Picture 1 (cartoon, rainbow, N blue to C red):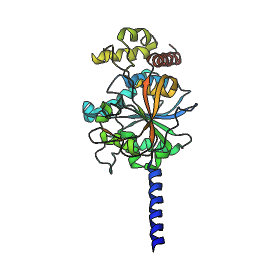
Picture 2 (picture 1 turned 60 degrees about the horizontal axis):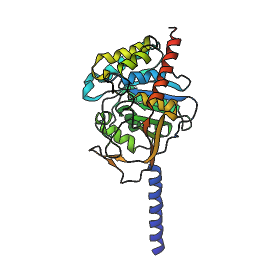
Picture 3 (picture 1 turned 180 degrees about the vertical axis):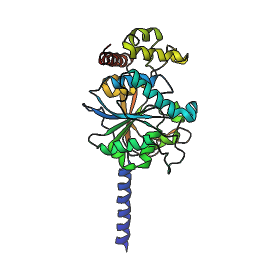
Picture 4 (picture 1 turned 90 degrees about the horizontal axis):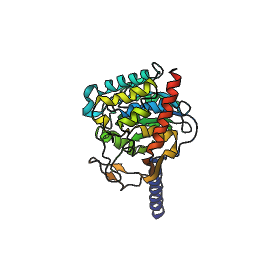
Length: 317
């Protein structure tokens, strides 16, 4: 009887360890290996001007990115019920201005997650799942989420089998290590909680406020680079906020980090959960993840200038 009890205790212990190991998040390969990356860009493009600058950088480096498509994201109450459609229209506009009209798939994303057991459905979520199933752990699909994490998280909730085939890079700029407090998080807290708790490899881009460019510098460095560069400069004129000298082109950094890892600094950090009050919770041993915490301003803008020069040449200007 005693031997049986010891056997049961040992079995329970081994089972617990097994569940613990398999519940930990897989670390993404970082720094990113050379070669083309399969990417889907999940963007709330209509919300800000930095998404357009990020898309420009992406389009200018075809040797680095195999663009599978774009998913239009909501941007909370600021965008309202038509936010996803506005983002979709803005993606169309950017691709047209860059000379890539009808070159890429664009899908409509989902509204914020209401229930973790009922992920919001959309063609964008299905598109992420479809492309993830074509990928592999050796050649994963990168889901670059520049806004709320809704679409990446909803895809994970709908089909967790894709966890092994994707890497999610989410733009945060949080109050690390205290709170996951930022615009993208407040637009869908449940989505953020899914990203931090899922086994899918996850990178937090947690910087970018220093990627600012005063209008006079933008005139010289951006507007001078063809009609698309002029477009990127002119869209800033639509609001006083976008013209502020310290206005960050935040999302630009996510793309730059994937082109040249030398422009960023990162750390391997203990992976927290995110509580309902946005506070980070490090009480559970969930493994580690990659957090990018700094980026070089000048090196990033030089990458953008090169991208714009390439696009200008491609357009024959």
